[in-house]
Each structure stands twice: as C-alpha cells, then as structure tokens.
Length: 209
Image 1 (tube, rainbow, N blue to C red):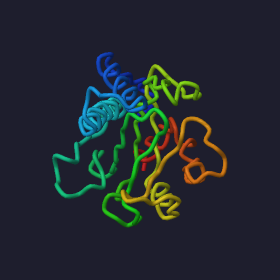
Image 2 (image 1 turned 90 degrees about the vertical axis):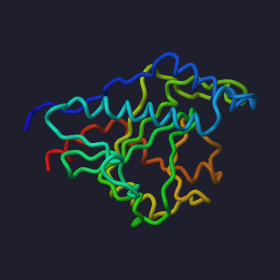
Image 3 (image 1 turned 90 degrees about the horizontal axis):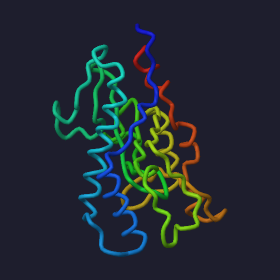
Image 4 (image 1 turned 180 degrees about the horizontal axis):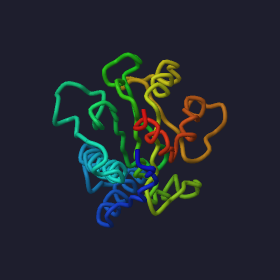
C-alpha cells in the first residue's frame, strides 16, 4: 500500500457560486427575495458537495476504484459512493452558515444508514452570513470548506440516542456559535461532531482494511 495519505483538498467554491449562495443566505436571514428557490439552493449545494468529495478521494486516483453508487443501483439510499466495491460512503452537503446539520431516518437499522463512512461537506463556512440578526454572531468564515468524516457506527450510535427527532427524522447538528445554555436547541446538539472535523485518517484506515 502506498504511503500517500488523505489530506484536506482545500476545496473552495467558484466565485460566482459563492456569491450566489451568499445572496441566498442573506435573503433567508433578512427575509427578502432569494435569487434561488429553496430546492434550487439544495440542489446546487449538493452538486458542489459532490465535487468537493470527488476532490478529496481523487488524491488516490488510480489506486482505488471509485463508483458513483447512484449509477449502479436504485432505491438504495444508504450510500453515494463506493470505493473498491466495498467501502460505502454517504455524502451530506449544505450551505447553512449557522450550523452544520443533516437528518436521518430515526431507526439505526434503516437503509439510509447503511454506510461505512459519512462525509459531510460544510459549504456554509465559506459564506458570510453575518447580517441582520446574525450580524454580531461570532460565526467563522473561511476561504475553504470544512470536511467532517464520521464512521458509520458512530453516526448510527448518535441516531440511536434520539437526542432530537422531528418530522424529518433524527437530526444531527452542531451550531457554529454559542447558544443560550440549557435551551432545547442547545441541549440537542451533537457536540461530538466537532471531533470529526478534518479526520481524513478515518478514510485512510478504512482503505487499509
């Protein structure tokens, strides 16, 4: 096995995409007209997150076989990429500036939790949403996106704890600024998520086994 290890690909958004998503954020915070409909923003964010994930795994291009799982099967929501026919990777990507978050079915044994690694691409960290009610919030703004790499067993453990379950399922989230202590929103956070930011070694270990 080559000694090459995964590192942060330092992925940044194209300037036109960054500006467009930032305008969407401002519109959401200020409650003004947005340049994109909600589903259009979600779709664009997912497309950018996919490019970011490919930039990450491309560091070992030619050493591993990488498949877009959506092209090889249908009705299997558990994973988005398959590496070497065995490592199942689910991708989460969004452009929220206040938090990194996503939802799962609240059953740890559900098909959408059938993956080995979850890669969350936080696009929101490159957007400056400090306007209106967020103007004074200490929300970080960076030149490149953040990656979170979380083993599947860890995610399923979080879901099993059911810290917060709403109509959309088990909600995994972590705010990027302090909330009022003791509130439901504060207590429902998955604080452990911070420990998995930039953990590219998790993918290294999976590929070694």
